[in-house]
Image (cartoon, rainbow, N blue to C red; front, top):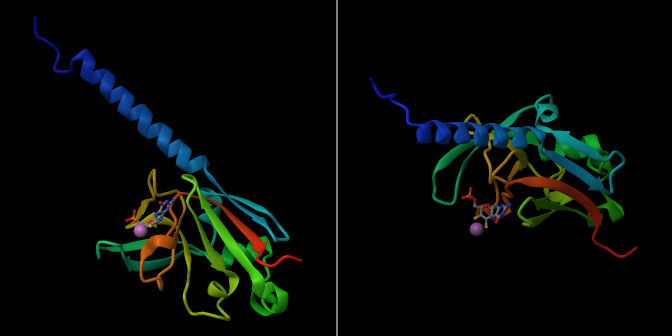
Length: 171
Ligand SMILES: Nc1nc2c(c(=O)[nH]1)N[C@H]1C(S)=C(S)[C@@H](COP(=O)(O)O)O[C@H]1N2
Ligand SMILES: [Mo]
């Protein structure tokens, strides 16, 4: 009698791996990005919704000097959809507003609105959803901020979950 090429053990391992892959891609598809705080329209964005926004890409070097192409949507477009004070409205007290961006692992970074607004800067900050043509995986995605002009990538926050707009001053 010929023995099967596949042991019970290897079949079990393969099934488990398949299940894990399915589960993690499910987690990526259902993860949402919240845009909250000083906005007129709070947003809960899924990857599928972001795919309908204009797609922009950036070629950047990572901390090891390796080149990658990140693509996604511009942070300013998301802020405009949420009704944040940008463009002509970004003056006076609104210049004291900031974004606090939070990740799944508790990491947080801050940007001022003027750092993002095209009337103040030519730098285009990206909410990336792909890297070298692939969706951002676990530990990095589904959403990551890419800030091309920062000399080091410490504010390229991975696994972004929320963007909170707030006033830095006490009113
Ligand atoms: N969510 C999250 N994003 C993060 C960090 C982190 O600890 N958590 N570390 C930052 C720092 S300090 C660096 S240098 C870069 C490293 O990016 P890499 O993992 O793609 O090399 O990620 C940044 N983004
Ligand atoms: Mo870092």
